[in-house]
Amino acid sequence: MPAKKLKIGVVGCGAIGSRIAYSVKKELKNCCQLTGIYDIDIRKVEELQKKLKLKNIAKSSLEELIRNCDCMIEAVNAKNTKTIIKKALMSKKSVLAMSVGKLLNAADLFRLAQKNHTHLLIPSGAIAGIDAIKAASLKTVKKLTLTTRKPPRGLKDNPYLVQKGFDLENIKKETVLFDGNVNEAVKCFPQNINVAATLAMASHLKTKLRIRILTSPRYKTNSHEIEMAGDFGTLITRTENVPCPDNPKTSYLAVLSGIQTLKQYCLGLSIGT
Ligand SMILES: NC(=O)c1ccc[n+]([C@@H]2O[C@H](COP(=O)([O-])OP(=O)(O)OC[C@H]3O[C@@H](n4cnc5c(N)ncnc54)[C@H](O)[C@@H]3O)[C@@H](O)[C@H]2O)c1
Image (cartoon, rainbow, N blue to C red):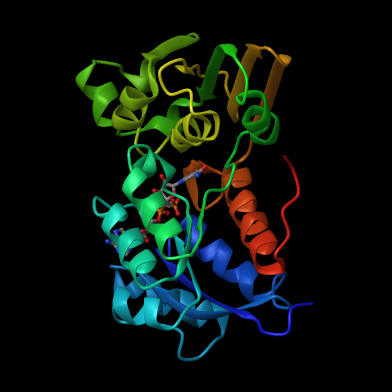
């Protein structure tokens, strides 16, 4: 057990931020402590503080949250996510980032973390195989694909699908909604396809990576299938993810992956590749 508990600040009190905050209080209580929560919606902060039965953790600004933590958990659904992460890194605080899609073209933030001797942590999310993919991509890779299958309700109100004329409520059979590269995927599905960005960053194979997104009324889970072939051999992984009860667009495994990444960081442990 570490001598000093790491101080954790959570920005974004939605589905992921709330669950990570609970875990810091419960399962991770031996290695870290929750010192702050912040959200642009003050009601969410107050509600979460009440549910957690903790006093003085509600912060009224991002700056106050950053001042009071060693590691900031980013779990926001915002246009300025990069700025939020940058502020913490500039203050030499580590960041565990959930909005990975926003980091796809953010080499400056990784450089900043390195310069300030701090950490920018990216959980695997709701996919399996990141450990092997990182190792395999050190040598030649011929193929890398991600096929994501989501029930129609998990894609509700997506502006790209509306613009393309997809009527999700009336789709009767398996339908390909998207087939393209990772930059386009993250742009068109910012709330649904963070795992594509995680895969691109872990493999450094942005141009080779092909993303397909399918839906069908028969799908009951969010599934992600990865296929890779190269010098190492071949790899196929598939997760069948239960949606997070608080937000159907988020897979429960993504939340658990964030919690495990934080735990390993607090314990100074790194297992896998
Ligand atoms: N890495 C992964 O595998 C993965 C998986 C699922 C979701 N995500 C991402 O994680 C993020 C959080 O997901 P969620 O399901 O908790 O979303 P959510 O919508 O349930 O919660 C997001 C919260 O952010 C708050 N917020 C918005 N703008 C803010 C700002 N400027 N400052 C502070 N708070 C702000 C909202 O009020 C809301 O409470 C999203 O960006 C989502 O795309 C990542």
